[in-house]
Image (cartoon, rainbow, N blue to C red; front, side, top):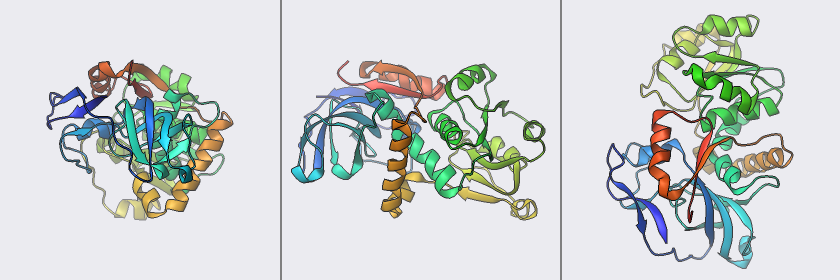
Length: 326
């Protein structure tokens, strides 16, 4: 079968290629899936450089999450050949076939196609864990979402709107704002460069934000400390900007807000019953049409480089999906 493999860690994708490898043999407790769609996530890009916290031994197959059809499964797994499933592991999804533990898979919610299902898991579980599980988001609260053009940011906007919150979608690129508005219908849009606290205050009538969802870090985090209302949360999701910011603890003390780190995958591993509940709630919302992943583009696996370079350049709104076999 064909698989997108990292043969060598490099900064320029030169160590990545499509390689012919053996079809995986299903181990006991695993489900063999014919992959129909695999979504690209920022950790995939980082892993090609050895810059992600999880560092698999080279060579390895890329792909954190995918959707497809069951080929083989144990009877007690709850899955049968032909079932539409979604899920994944830290690697292995960008290939014709993947074999992973049954517990890592879930049925595709009604109303979602394979592309949407592949794009939902990591982004929406991060958004739900942050906003609902940790943030205790309430209807009518103000949420400022940075990186709103990315898969995780758009998922946070989409979910927050579905939960009845008021959303400010922020991006550092003004040329993306119209596309963000079309994708998630936020209550307001913001270019988050320089000083944007006064704009946030004006938008919210002086209230500021109950939750700031920040996957960017750097200068965006620094200014966001001025945008959180008393009793609110500044959620640390990641550091796409590259600089890991620091904060003097007198700032959250005086302003009465919390700085909270969110690691959705680790949260689900430590509290598996909550992880299952989160995915169940997301499936209900998706089946009811209340949340829908945004796909920027779908490309055949053979055009993987175009996909990775587009993500690296920040030229996407939503998720890129790669289709093996195409």
